[in-house]
Length: 262
Image (cartoon, rainbow, N blue to C red; front, top):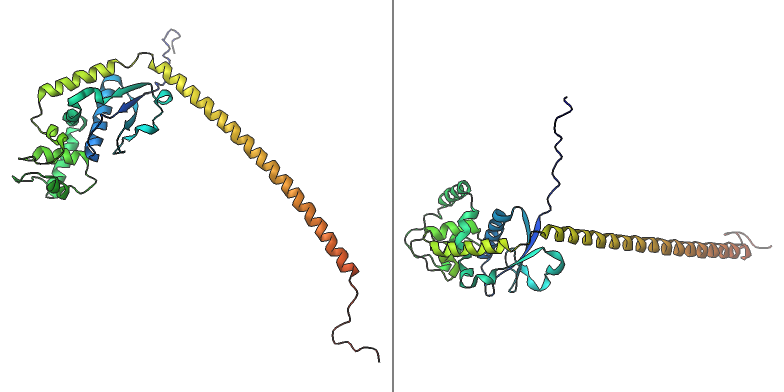
């Protein structure tokens, strides 16, 4: 093998950034819509920044992948934050981008399956909340909701986000959401990976401390158990000695069925 060949060192593994995402106030309580929003955020930010991990939080009731905001520990758990409330009136229309998260081949397969189940086509009857619930029993898959809503001739559901799933979504609205996503992704600091390493090292140090404390507790419990065992053993020996002495001091009793003195 020639000695002058360049040596290529493997790249160090990249630690994914962790992004904290807070849902817009008053967001939909529909589980399918909530899941759509999380999928869109994940897809759009990873398309712009590469592999990421997310901590999805909501100030309302937990729904889908969105966990309670009151339990968030973003000061130490995330590298950057995103506030969907900054979208303003566009927050309800974020689901306009849901089609980007669906693989066309997978969507075609799912659509054929819904046709096989006699769910599609739904006909000309208006699509109401009750009819949607009948067609797609809970919990409804987000992709199924997307396919059914798009196929409806007349949409009469009470969920505002459903209107944004229509095939005729406003291109200008989508462009405005894209511009906001571009700006939000650009706001993630370039040195966030350094913060990630610092955070992970702090977590490792904390876990090592907890492990050491647990080991100390185990050793202390073992010593206590051994001391107690020694006490119980000594007490057993004392009781056995007393029992043996009692047996020796007890007067001999006549044999059963023996005849007394004549």
